Length: 261
Image 1 (cartoon, rainbow, N blue to C red):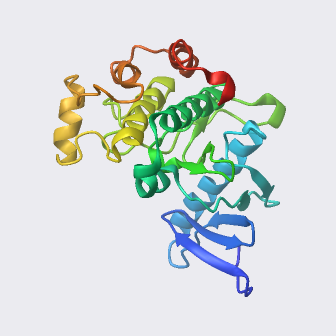
Image 2 (cartoon, rainbow, N blue to C red):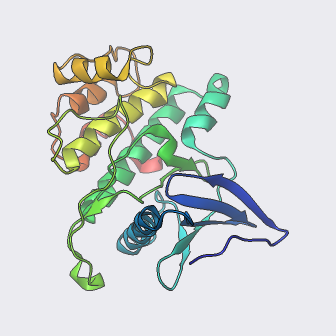
Image 3 (cartoon, rainbow, N blue to C red):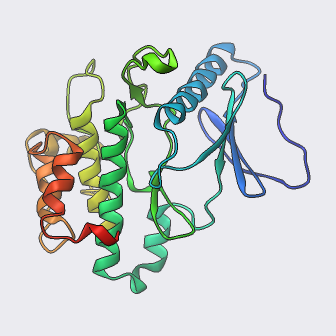
């Protein structure tokens, strides 16, 4: 069991459903949440932490993925680099007046590239939305939060295939059967909604009830993307016109100079 910290330089950032997060200097420690009165939930929380540790082992270091600095001996915690600018969602919303279209394009490309990278490693994120990207010291968007992700078998790490435990939020969720695992296509659908949010600060149909949004999506009805950065590509994600994030990236770089991003 992982004990809570009492060090004076340790700041508790949040307690989530499955984990507790602390800042220790320039690091963030994320450890599984212990419920003393519920061993079953505690075991699930540990499993989520192990999953996230495994994903960081699979992904290794990448400039558009949150940097993992350490993993506990039993994978009961991970230590990540601290990014003072916070989530891309919060950063864009608070700085909207100073952000131009070129900057939105840069972040959009980085979001696409990060998803393309995890897919190339056999990982499905399974809960993409704009606040899953953090802004690093260079202003780049780094993808984070893999505790509910799924991944392919990884023989080099002795890891068996794992289905995703997560499910996208309303507005990012591709309607499908209840027993269907997350996939490249479900991630791409959620990526489309995340790019929409990058433009608008809101999920698709923010004023409608969840059930209504799911019904509209199931019928193929989506909000207008006219005038948005990557508007046509967002619609293509929603309509499942792309079969990979690399396809989406190829479509974008046909009219955006990605060499300087």
